[in-house]
Image 1 (tube, rainbow, N blue to C red):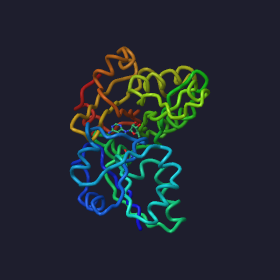
Image 2 (image 1 turned 60 degrees about the vertical axis):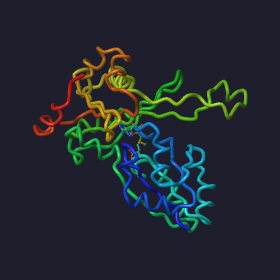
Image 3 (image 1 turned 90 degrees about the vertical axis):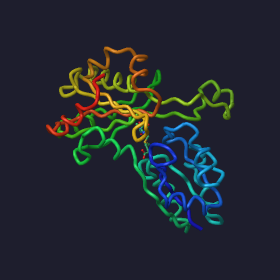
Image 4 (image 1 turned 120 degrees about the vertical axis):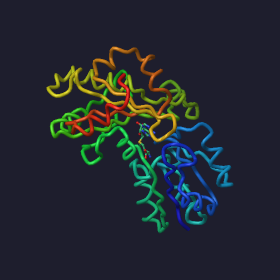
Length: 278
Ligand SMILES: C[S@@+](CC[C@H](N)C(=O)[O-])C[C@H]1O[C@@H](n2cnc3c(N)ncnc32)[C@H](O)[C@@H]1O
C-alpha cells in the first residue's frame, strides 16, 4: 500500500491539485500535518473534508516524527499525509520518505507551491537566493546565533536570504514538564516580523557586523499565497521605529517570513518598490 505525501499549497483548499484530491478520495486514512506549517485559511480542515468526502485527522509533531504508526498503517491501508505548502520544504518529510522506503512502503509525492518559491512574488529572483535560515524563539538561557554567519556570507556573495520564523505548537512548559503533566500544552506561538527583525538587529550590533546594520533593507511577508497576503519593505531602522503592536497590525495573522536582500538588480528593485513601505 502507498503513502501519499500531498502538498496543499499555501492559500486555501482551492489550491489542492486535482491529482491530490483524487488520491485523497482513494485513501483509507487522511492526516493533515500541522506543526511545520499551518493553513492560512480559516476552516481549512473542514473545507478539505467537504471537498474530498474524507475525515481528515490533524497529525502532530510526535505522530509524524516518530513515524512508526504512519508507516505501519501505510503497510495495510492507503494513507494520505497532507502537508501545507510542499512536502519537501521541511526536512521531517524527507525522514519519513526514507523510513517508508526502508520498510518497503511506496511513496507518491504530489508537489505544490511552497514559501520557498512563492517568495518570488516580492520581485527577488529565486536563482539569486543563498542558504535559507530559520530564527528560533529565544529563551532566558538559549539564544542561538549560528544563523548569523550564514546571513553574512549570503550578503558577501550578493545573494538574498529567506528567513523563516519559528513555529511552536504542542509545547510543554518547564513547569508542566517538572510536574509530569505531559499532555498539557502551551498555546501555539508563531514568531512575528517585529520579533524576527529585532533579533537580526540585536545580533548584528552585538557581533559588530560590517555588512548588516540599521540601513539594511528587510522585506516582510505574511500569509503568502493566500488572498490575504501582505508584503512590506523598509530598512531595519524604519521597522524598529514601529512598536511590535504597529507591525503586528500591518502584517496581520501568521505565518510570517522575512527576506534580507543581497545585491538588487534594477528590475528586482523596480518590482519590490511596487509594494508599500513600512
Ligand atoms: C518549514 S517552513 C514551510 C514549509 C511548508 N511546507 C512550505 O512548503 O512552505 C515553515 C516556515 O515557513 C514560513 N511560511 C510558511 N508558509 C508561509 C506563508 N504562507 N507566508 C509566509 N511565511 C510562510 C514561516 O516562516 C514558517 O515558520
